[in-house]
View 1 (cartoon, helix red, strand yellow):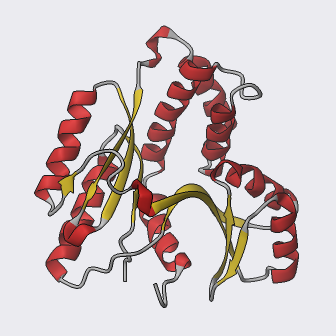
View 2 (tube, rainbow, N blue to C red; view 1 turned 135 degrees about the horizontal axis):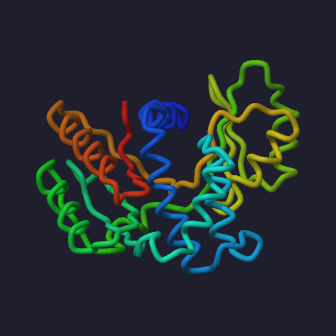
View 3 (cartoon, one colour; view 1 turned 180 degrees about the vertical axis):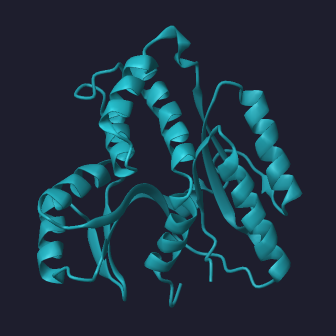
Length: 240
């Protein structure tokens, strides 16, 4: 989309999540429990767990908390969570993908259907919108005080796939599974990483013009994100 700024969308997303650190830890905790039960507690032999530990650190979760959680995840009292993906449409056909870790599929599916129906959308079948997204990782480094050429060289040498310069920030694109490793390498080289996330990048964006559609879309995303079962939400709404 002409004029689309990755940083503007990412900044708004970051501003919304900065005040929800406790909820972010709850969501990551469920993902770690699923990963440990599937592949064991050793991150050197469990790539998914290693990635989630890096994700937890990227969200400022203390190492002691992470260690306790990994140990607890292998126990009988950790809970039994399944990973589920929901896909649907918001107002005016905005594509939405929801990842969840739930101990009650019926409850979570009912909640998702209720949110989509109530706020101007509809819950679809798996695959109905995922083709509109590509898996990737996104690392943000603010431009102030950072030499562009040095950062670009370090990022590409670490395995980054793309480097975009915007007015306020550098946007580094990576393979989804490489984002936290590359973040660590950049930080070790002295670059101040603002944020790093595994994402789904939309191929196209949808702009909402009507105030009511914008209101409903905000409510839909807010209610989905507030659900404890939900671990990640992706959409292609261009938030102007």
